[in-house]
Image 1 (tube, rainbow, N blue to C red):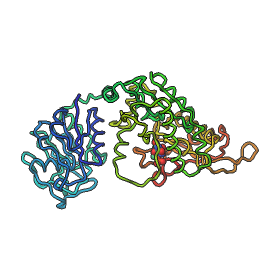
Image 2 (image 1 turned 30 degrees about the horizontal axis):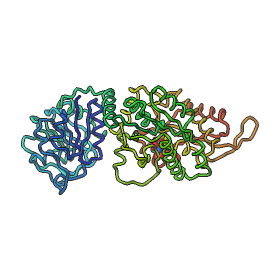
Image 3 (image 1 turned 135 degrees about the horizontal axis):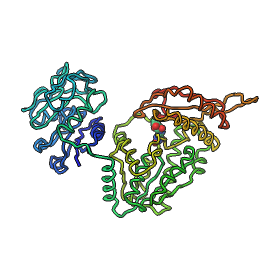
Length: 509
Ligand code: XMP
């Protein structure tokens, strides 16, 4: 199997590079920059990519690359810091600023005589983010692209197949970034592009078996895509030595608990569904403050899971559905707490497990979905929109009661059904109903009603960090509205949320 190695020099974008390589069906791994040339040689990659990074190559303690990398005969592509590092390591010179610093979009002119750029237009927009620039090229190199201020926006040594680009081809703002990465992989490294989801599956199973041996494992199944795919993969790898504990907190959507159970029936695993509705609802009784709700649910979840784990006699390993973006996010310093997120990632580590298994740690969400499909999880299951760990508790505004939850479940099911029937749901990232705590006067038949207002929320987003409210056709909203007020008791008014994130968040609490 062809593989490409990415050496990480601390870039914000190094995971994105991995994403872009894998998009081309070429396997890649990210290694720390300290990986020795010998380690790299043993892995026999068809190419090496040096990522960007926040440092200056000439600064004291700056992360360097093992110079012997350049004697292995393997093509190298350096991106931003990686590009400067190639120059620095091979005898060129990198200097601060010099008027050549650039942040943002830059019109860039390429020398199309170079194989890396031969399929690109002569001029296009690239995304720059650098303070230093290469003031002297190493021997054998020539400048391969320029911008108005930077004479070395790309460098190339065709003979040795070493290339550096000062800009970021992995970022969408670079117009032909994808083509450039393709050219490096296919034209320079000779990749075949035949890495498939089947390969991900085989490799993941091999690694799980290697780690777990003949031990047992325990997995907290939430019904979300990540923990479900992790469960399916573990089931395939270790069969009935896997126990999945599904804590049904009674805050799921309509029929969801049963659907989770159904989806896991075909596997020869131990599946435990814990009916914890009473315990969660009684702990939440009278609580109205969103953060308090979230904290109670998070803590109660851990307690319920621990009890269950003890009851079934524990296990050697704890399985978590951590995916690549989670890994990246937890690596990014501290930012303000907007909401304390709860998901199965925050599980106890003090039940005495030998270790943690994270079979999806290297995968992006769409790879996880493809893997789930390959493993035989139903499509509807794998394509689920994200659902927050605290479930409907944060979609019933104010105090939570069983009755309100049921009202919300019915209304939410109608909204989802109509969006699916109209085909609109395919274009949405997330959509759901929220039961507000506000009541208003209405008229039904000949009588007065005094019932709850229900809000509908639908957003489009790539990353869930920002989101735009979705322009759902009025006739679809109209159908949803009249169905809900007619079919769901306790609701007499429907509103549609037309706020983007920011300033609002996607969930209401
Ligand atoms: P917000 O409301 O912060 O939501 O704009 C962003 C995304 O995160 C989901 N979300 C959660 N997911 N545990 C989760 O696993 C949580 O506690 C949680 N809270 C919000 C939300 O549904 C949206 O997709």
